[in-house]
Each structure stands twice: as C-alpha cells, then as structure tokens.
Length: 169
Image (spheres, rainbow, N blue to C red):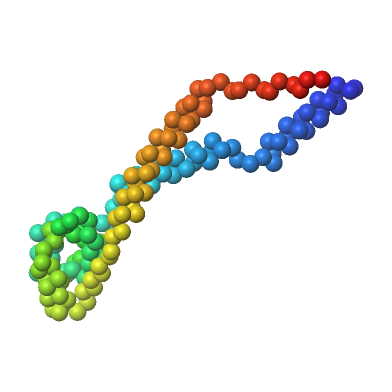
C-alpha cells in the first residue's frame, strides 16, 4: 500500500506541474518567429484586394479626363512617388482603387494644384513616410529569425544535461 500512495503522490505532482505551468519558452519563441515571418511576407507582398495597378501614362490620362477623385502620395524612393487613389468611372460613377508610381518632378505641385482648381471633389493627401524605423525593423527581423533558428537547432541537437549528483550524506 505504501508504494501505491507514493505513486499517487508522484502522479499528483506531475499533474500539478503540467496543468499550472507557464507556457514553455520554446513555444513563445516559435510563435514570435512565425509572426515575424508573417510580417515580412505581408510587407513584401501587400494584399492587393480590389486595387488596380495602372501606369504613369494611364494616371495622367485619367487626370486629363477628370476621373481622379482621391490621391495619397508617398515618397517611395528618391525621385519616385507612390500613389494610391480612387478613379471614377464616368458612365456609372463607381469608384475603383488604383495604385501607381510616377517620377517626381518640380512641377508635380503645380500639376496637382491645377487639377484641384478644376475638379472640386478632388482630395490630395500627402503621407510622410518614416522609412528609417521601417527599414530598421525589417533589417533586424531576418537576423532575429536566424538567431532563433540556430538556437533551436543547437538546443534540440544537444543532449539534455544530466541531473545533479545527490548531496553527500
């Protein structure tokens, strides 16, 4: 009977340690690695949804025909403007979201000002792009991923350390 009660106590201890324990460190790190991969993928492959990609020529042609309703400008690179906006179908008045990239020039301000003067419903939004923080994050994520991968490879390949020796009597 003494053996059965000792076995029951061992089972109780093992149940307590697994049911009330914190999540393992390895699980948390793997979740962070998966999330960082997801962030990298979303950044590199943005979800297009209903966005139509148009060329710079098509963009200026739509401006000449007064079809552009809204424009959000961002500096994507020196001399290159990224544009996301809405273009109106003249026949049905439906709005379609578009994106394009155009070469930046000194006359861009006057082009958009002239367009705003002749098209009352035109909305221009200029977004400031904080590329320094974004580039820092996306340059560190692959390093974190590689370090985590190496840690787990070594952690899984090394044998577990032996238990400490019992204290001397």
